[in-house]
Image (tube, rainbow, N blue to C red):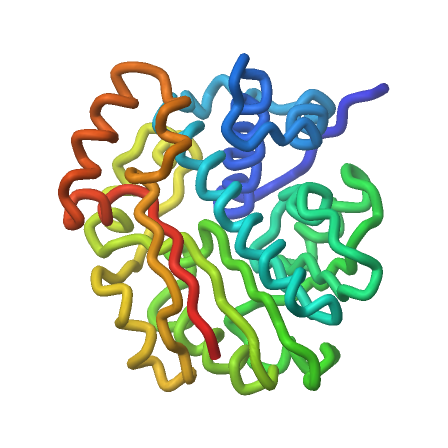
Length: 270
């Protein structure tokens, strides 16, 4: 099978970072996520993944946050088999394959038009691809309004400028009658420090925003109520982390403030 080379600008190139992290996890003897779809996809892409210099902390953190977000989607769909699922900033994520929703679910993989145009070349057709600039009003107009929605935004928050994430959230919750929003929440320090991470520097992008208090989104006038904050430093899957990362993560887990600087999953109801 010939290898494919996507042409991407620095912002869109981050989709290869998370793809490769999931692929590396899948090739471990005891993977956390075990996403063999991503592993096979990475093998088909003509790209110098070595330049990303992925460290175990990023590989393990990416795999664990994806696993917890997948669990949130499956739980929602189990209760709402007629749901609409939106995977925002999907890139080449294989979540729809991992979650394997029933045919009664309308699943939309949403990203920039040039990004979602890549998906049919690389991934089986299990979802509807929606090309949209998430910062521009009106992109939701073609989607159903009268069904419960599960909205996932993994890794998206720091890369939307200004208050555009909040504005996008208000538009989402105004469009759908009810649902959940699940994100991996970055603190302000975590978002700021990302720009100095070797992998982010290698791609050449600048991260922007985050928030510390998990209740902050309730002030966005989007009708959000915090349903759950998962501090992944305390997740049982940390036992699969390599040393010394496992020991450092377990030590961090004793402090809520420090745990929030790591990976956390936030779920909101609306």
